[in-house]
Length: 416
Image 1 (cartoon, one colour):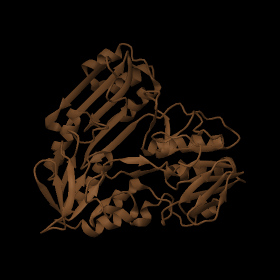
Image 2 (cartoon, rainbow, N blue to C red):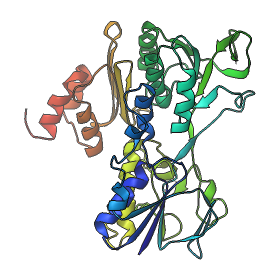
Image 3 (tube, rainbow, N blue to C red):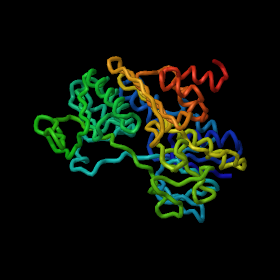
Image 4 (tube, one colour):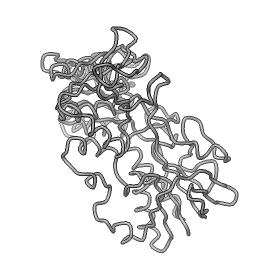
């Protein structure tokens, strides 16, 4: 059996390892389109902070790891997939045959359609090449504008602060991290960052970028004039890399559509990670979850189903995010915004930057949002994923949401 994997990120690497374990004799080829060995984008902030070197971002540390595991690694971009003949066409020209194919091509950063995004000094922070460009410009006291205060933006934010830059963050929504935090917790996070010396502009849109006078760049805002900048970093979201499927019969929407086996509309082609539009645990709908835990979960299930075992069903990935922003931990799990007509409870301490919000459907916990709380957040995920009926503990949590461990012990472990 010849297995080919497009994408050398966490999903691709975990899938290759799973296939090797299940089918020791199969041919496995892992294809990445960057010049470096397979690496983790989530490690780039540590590289920016000089906590690791470039090799520290590599997913597997020994130089001969893939060779020792008989996994061929190719550095190439796939331009086309012939699903009928099971042939890939890379930019290097030589065609690649496959019996089973996994598309784990990930996602790419989205650049807003505004003037000046192609000027020198305007970068994404997505690849090691991007990181090197940022390091060259993010010197102490440099003026840096970060577009976007979402999950990726907040990870980059901490790295930039550690480099001693003068940082301004511009976020279109009315709060930070709007896809994992509500208005109260997102506003608290903004206050926390401002206390640490970061300028945070919410409900603020960048309308253009121009060449500057005293500084290389001038960032034109929709309100409030322009911001001088030595460096602009764009972190305004990502989009699934589905272009390679455009000329094929593989069905796509926001991502590549997959079934409960992570199988596409072609029986021998699977998809995993940021590129896959799979089932969401909370809603039952099909969506793209561009988070690493989902990518790894997809990879193991898809790889298993690429073998003859075909025994693993994907019942839906739980949406979860845990974020450390300048020392303040925030998290969200499941349907953290709740459903219309359902119950919720919250507890906040603005002075101590503490917040907890729980969402219920009947007596089942379906979502949670926390700020400044690190104890028992794994319990929140467990209760959501197990759909445990809380019974009388729902009312107890409504009165005191911090009793989450007690509720877990009483309902799951059978202990008072």
